[in-house]
Image 1 (tube, rainbow over the protein chains, first blue to last red):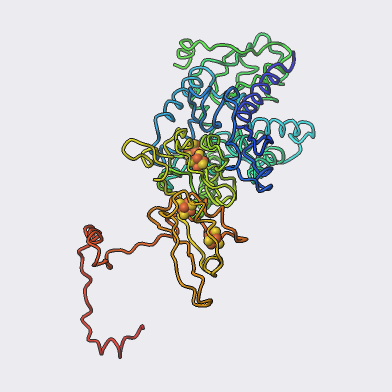
Image 2: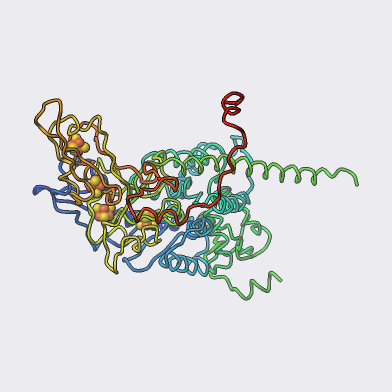
Length: 306
Length: 257
Ligand code: SF4
Ligand code: SF4
Ligand code: SF4
Ligand code: SF4
């Protein structure tokens, strides 16, 4: 099936959002009437000047508590903590005295993504991926990739911005990327209500749509950079087979980080560029089965590098 | 060594990148500074000192989910607090001072600190200092001599945090004033008084403690209060040099008065 990984990604992505969303859903019963409360928005009964204290307090469904919190820090089934490694690094450098839960959550994430998934976070979890994929789709539709003169921001700028983020955290004693992060804005917006965060998301969309192909995730996002670095040696990879390749270059066209496909048309290889988000778009578009998901042979790769 | 076109170009590129990073950093810094400095919003119970709190809160919203009264919200852009930080608006929904303080219990980062609310190994929500209530004596109808004790009745620490002072009303010659007064040391800043106030805009308002509370310093000591002298312990012993000028000089030729 042509779009199997795209569908899988959307199911996982949206599924995670829905689970966070219903985790925060609750209802209250005031004077015998039930009110459902989405995103903590109580205006339905507050404007009725019905005081909460007069009713019973809120009822949450424990069974829906698959996820608590958000992508910055969450708990699965109320037990397994997970924390965003960039958020933790920022708070740590800002000088925060963090509780143990956060560090355990960090280790859980480091193990999962460091050993196995690498930057797959960007393709399978991050909600901004929905926005930028839509922008990329529109670009293709309108043929903007060839028309609009692009501004020049290097692929490595994201590592520079990551560095800047960490330095500013140290100087200002606060998690500085969290203050402007469209990722957190969007995810928090979906779970707790969007507000002016909408404009942050719009900015990312317009930037990707009008100014730079794969602009935000490919060139700017320090969280993407963080997961790249963490997942440098992760074993889940895309593999390229030169023998089967007819060199149509469709994969390079579609890949949001196409510099990692530099071996295409040259020699068989494991795509070991750390920026690969493992979205599988290249696998889908290839009509010749030259690309597949696979497990990298760590030892062999080491030898290749030497 | 002659000019190498490609080397020159890559040098130019590097300088450009450094320049962009510097400009970006500058704008970003200005924003951070602005957003950190301005805040009249109230933090949840058990929050550490604001600076420490901002360093620890990971903005997960678990406190928001845990609060049974929908008191807490996460700051959105333009909300006057760093984005994603939990806060509450007492006029909408005050903090109901849950005995088991679920918001603090669930916080994974330690930004809401159980220690701050613990007394002899027992959680005591009344130890929270989210803010302090301030009465606007010009608009509070009780100060106008009209009977109202809405805030007083609403206060969970009635007669301790919020008490009434009785005064004779000279205008009528009979009715007495029942004036709401706040004890800064006891008020938790829960805002139930602000929520209850009957005037169009609340005449009793909870504000962050660091914004409104003063400090007497060591120049002034209440001599009648033995305890008060203990404040002198940390007083600086450095003496200011007195001017050598004579008083007349100072009066007649003090050029830059
Ligand atoms: S103490 Fe209770 S009412 Fe107050 S913020 Fe926490 S959970 Fe909400
Ligand atoms: S639970 Fe703690 S870390 Fe999470 S948003 Fe609330 S104060 Fe911040
Ligand atoms: S904020 Fe108001 S209600 Fe709460 S303790 Fe202080 S005076 Fe009482
Ligand atoms: S409720 Fe408002 S008007 Fe009434 S006494 Fe309190 S502050 Fe004054």
